[in-house]
Image (cartoon, rainbow, N blue to C red):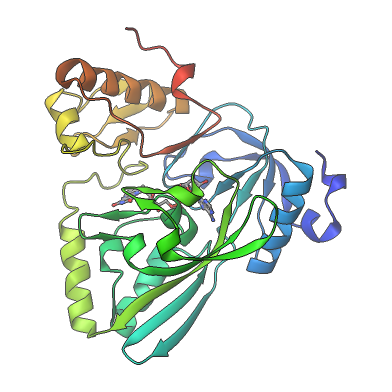
Length: 310
Ligand SMILES: Cc1cc2nc3c(=O)[nH]c(=O)nc-3n(C[C@H](O)[C@H](O)[C@H](O)COP(=O)(O)OP(=O)(O)OC[C@H]3O[C@@H](n4cnc5c(N)ncnc54)[C@H](O)[C@@H]3O)c2cc1C
């Protein structure tokens, strides 16, 4: 695949040999041979159409806050959505609908709802990233998740066609959206449903949501929780009881504040993070017989690449 093969309209937002580390919250990751950064929903659709004709696969990157990107060269094109940001609001009785482009920051939507006194997204306080990324992982906390706030999701399908999905058809689960798993289906936008409320009430609920996150590390580069909570357990508690807090591999360290967070201490590689995560996973299995599975997504690095002993 080469830049020449892209029409001029798409070529305008393609860059080659771009370092991905600064595009992730962990701050690790190698060079993408091809980085495609459309600047509007229309350009996003055009870019996906081109990628689907020229490449067997590509990776969609939102805010990079839930992804571990390998240290080597990323051969498949990376489609970055963060410049496709727009919001359209409509009100119908007590209901408020916000139609957001996939790359819109979740925090930007939340800020608008606080300013206007619209209720329904308070749980999202403190969750970085884009609307598309949040839908892909059904982002949330114990207070709620995206599946409860979204009514419609617009995608570009495997065959390049556009589709509007009702939220009920998206196959939601805990930190997953079945319809967006293992496919090259891309979210281009979504309609959220909120309700008219009171600014003070919304702000108080947001403050409460932020306070409940108190034990998470601040001021360090992380990607949120590394592992999902296994059924009936808290991954953080298992990792804590397995004495993972403070473990270090190279520039990666398990947070002293929350055992399910891995911090980049500087001079950290994706390999360091993966190795440390797998050591933690092994400890938990050996101690409790519970197999942890990743909440983070990976690109260009896999569990199987790294051996941490039997
Ligand atoms: C400090 C911190 C705190 C966090 N707290 C929470 C929390 O409380 N709850 C929680 O759930 N998460 C949390 N996270 C993780 C992360 O913020 C969320 O998962 C977030 O929704 C990811 O969005 P993103 O845009 O950064 O996605 P990315 O990390 O860029 O991508 C994540 C996945 O989504 C896919 N994706 C992205 N955009 C699209 C699209 N348009 N169409 C299809 N697929 C797409 C990617 O391919 C990838 O598989 C936290 C992260 C950090 C750094």
